[in-house]
Image (tube, rainbow, N blue to C red; front, side, top):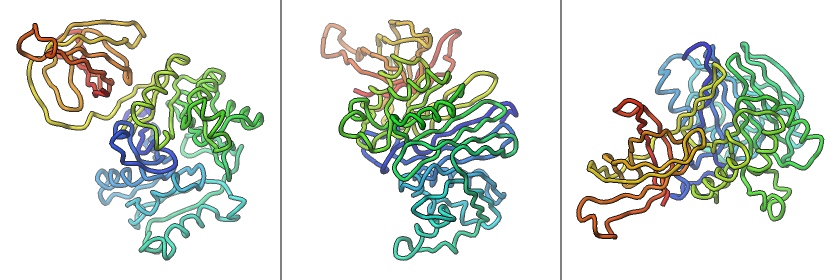
Length: 389
């Protein structure tokens, strides 16, 4: 990776409990875990939800027998943020070295994070005890308001409003600043002001958006989470460049998250909905976003004429006639002269080959943009979409 670029990868984005519901497959069902690689290669992990297992498997595949060293920032001790720890394969390799950071819980006292480790793997909750973890582990207690530096990355912590406590982290790398502030409920003046300070001028601001504004004001008030609207308000006031909606509710289908993203983008331009496999590259005063490829399905190569309607990256509406040559049950690859925005919605009116006079030969679909690449012709864009209906 170039020495002027930082890379942020999303391995788990769901809140409260993991889910494998088919309606949630596009955004993903694993609980919180992010990987940040600083420009010099220093590796950070933000939270240890079930997404940690997939990250560990990936690291094992990449590094093999080479020693791994990483710094792991844990926001708090609720299950969805720590339940991946026993399944993180690199912790069972003796040459690896991990530095853990979190706060002292008033309920656990001294060595809170170490106690969490031991309790998760104590009998009768887990078949293997902590002695099986042969990697070197170091635990550091940090408090809200602390500042420290790790190999050129400056880290600041702030307390967030969440039952039993939670930390937000600001990581200032030479390539730019990432703020991770999940599990926070707005409404406490002092903590709201602290969050604004934490997020000030961030290139990427990852914020809890588990509930709708209506839920936050009624049935979910006091549960310790936020909404897309509260995140937008912080992003505007703090001068954030990119807002990422995070910690999706397990009962929020992909279609519901699509709607929250659409609402948020009407209020703030640079909003993204976190999805598993999403990668954000940060550097040279820009943030580039890469979404995971659509799942494979029954593929049909053909010649399907279609009319596509959507919005460009600049927000301009467009309508274009095209041909779909690569179609699956889940999505399609379409070549356009326009370049739509990632995570934007397209309307696709498709005509099947055959009798053009038959009205039932037309199929109206909604598509969701997950991939943008150069097309086969000059000034053409290859657009990968997933069908949502």
